[in-house]
Amino acid sequence: MNSEDVAHYLLNTPEFFEDHLDTLAQITLAHPHGGRTISLGERQLLALREKNKVLEKQMYEMLEFARENEALQNKVHEFTVSLFAARDLTTLQEMIPHLLRDIFSVPHVAMHLWQVTPPSMEVLMFTDEQSKPVCLHQAAHDTASWFGESASLLHSFAYLPLHAGSVSVGLLVLASEEKQRFYPEMGTVFLQRIADAAGSALHPYLDH
Image (cartoon, rainbow, N blue to C red; front, side, top):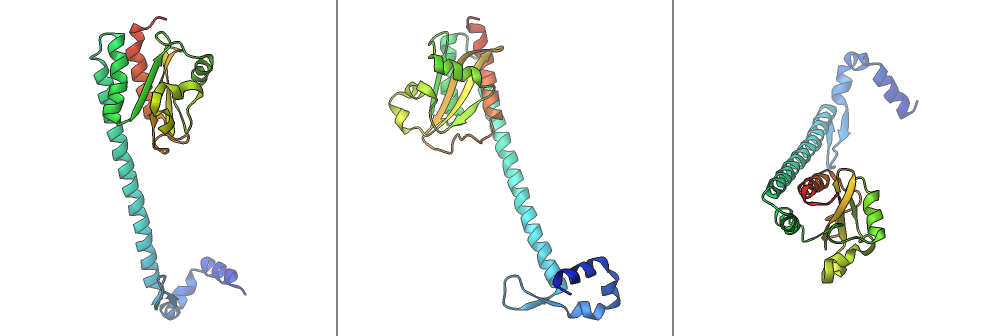
């Protein structure tokens, strides 16, 4: 009989320990952190404590995630409400990058509207292919030049297509020197909300 047979027998014969309580009391196990032996009951208690620590850590991480989400939601709300102050396209063109730097601490922001600055064919095709924001570690096509002398310092980019209905009207690009500020696997829900708010604010002032 090997250890697996013993384990199988005990799992399927719960009355064994009821019939041999003295045996149960005599069982000792190595302490998980070494140094001495402990009873089976003590070992179970330690296991429960370890499990509780894991659960507490998971709960803390969930609460932190919830706080971060709430903070982001508040920032998106502030950004959206601030856009209502604009009364013309020129103001919005200045306001949107400024708000993103100020509210979200994004160090580099560039926004090109096709009506004002016609894009290259590659950038237009790239924008039209995106159904939602996309994050990259390299600048797409010629968009690095949108950041002037800072271009060579940038290592992460978030591309937010701007739409008026189903038609793309521009591209909003957030960039950072930090490689992990924007990365391909990150969630884009809040970036999409920013794009939606900016696109809606711009819509009345753009030719369609």
